[in-house]
Length: 308
Image (cartoon, rainbow, N blue to C red; front, side):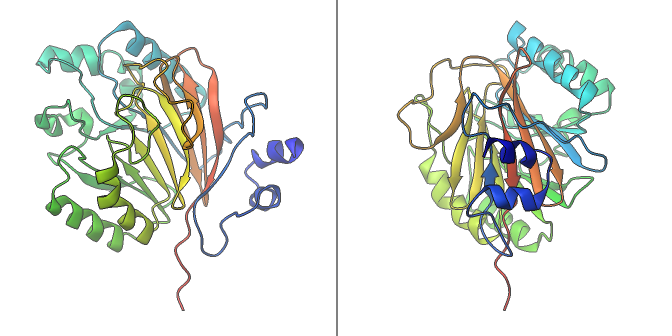
């Protein structure tokens, strides 16, 4: 099994299918393949030509040393894994939002990435001023919620505003999902539908409003923030969920160790996630402030039901 899982990290679909049960076939849920224990070596990113490479974090904008150190690790990762876009899962500026705060809490920490022409796409969190949507570097184009097509690999990201998910937004996301013909549909939200956080935890009302649509229209992955740690949730309703709220703030020890939701959690340091999509696979590594890979795996995308 160990040898088979290491071979799976080489992105060979047939080997992945041979190593697991319940892998998505012509139709079926998203499936996650990852090391069974922390003792197993992490599954490396293929870093292959033509793949879509991206990063994700949330709750970042403190302007404090930990944010700068994590940003430095992101820039170091970018040197060998040149991701082209970053998804921000809300609470992008924590505290005051004066012009100098945009500088100290965003532009300075991520200067190396910005200079390398990496694009940032922000979601609004509950602590964010709605005027952030007009800030050019967040690429929101004045919209509180929006979607955009990634430059490679038939991926579309849907970025929601989950503090005030009014009926207009729910109708919008249903229409967007229904009309999207992309293979990969990936959600970026601030409030997690599933979380083992002691302070916040799962947003059950948001889940009731959104999850049926995510299932109906074959969403594969949901990235969230709000709880200040890293958590990969066991797939729910055939969808892979991540909590990525330790981009700047950290709630050390906040993951409920008794939770049945957690596939892998890390709440002792700041972290971010890097992902790579090639065809029907999304490889991911969660990386700590010190550069340690604290989680890894491969997601096989959710397949829509076969038409008859």
